[in-house]
Amino acid sequence: RDIAHRSNDVGLYREAVQLYAGDVLPEDRYEDWASEIRDRMHRSFVELLAGLGRLYESRGDWQQALTVLDRAAHADPPNEEIH
Image (cartoon, rainbow, N blue to C red; front, side, top):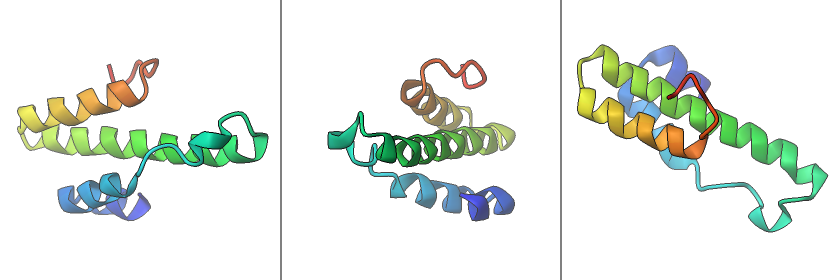
């Protein structure tokens, strides 16, 4: 995530987003030891999507920006900044 953020490289952002395979340990949803890791990974995923959306937007690629930001909004519905 940090490398993609520093580089502003769409390809690195896309690779980092693809590494997210979903919630960590979904079978242990209510285990305290797993929730911090799961939340941190999910936040990183949403931040990557938001950053990728901003990159597409800055390049005038509005369709890609909307697609990525829509995915971010679905991943984190209460996030007002993404909406």
